[in-house]
Length: 104
Image (cartoon, rainbow, N blue to C red):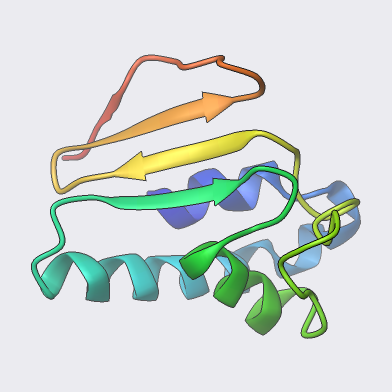
């Protein structure tokens, strides 16, 4: 679900890569949760970080450097998703937290 949520955030110019991008995120989130992490944070302030940066590099832009507005035209700014085994908690924009999405 986390991969799908972020794939929906991709700029339409990358719509053909949404499936691969989603899978790239999902594999990494699953691995992190299985290693015992209680939550995984997928963040794009102005640049993707961590797992999200790895997925962008793998599926969209191998040269994305993670600094200097490197996600411009790829992902929206100030978006974040907190992933736990129970829910996804998204933030879309400046402080725009939305209700948690239960994981079934």
